[in-house]
Image (cartoon, rainbow, N blue to C red; front, side, top):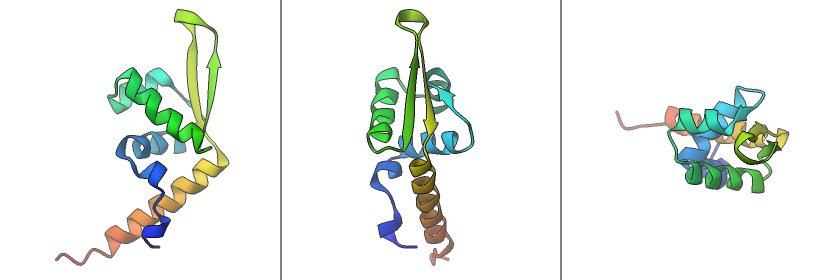
Length: 99
């Protein structure tokens, strides 16, 4: 694993945290992610839009107006990218020589 294996889309801390949540779930609602990540609506929207544009998550919207629900699910491409990114981070941490 090398620096080249780090995905700049996933590497941003907020997106990395969202991908970690989504990697272990079938899907997650906007409200769930907002609560667990501690982000403002606009910030979460921005982060999830970047993941969606990269093809790493699928966004599903149900309903309109105040009762609408937005949910996110990790895609196959997103799951693969997350696994590679995570493995690269773990390899770098394992190789830490600052003893």
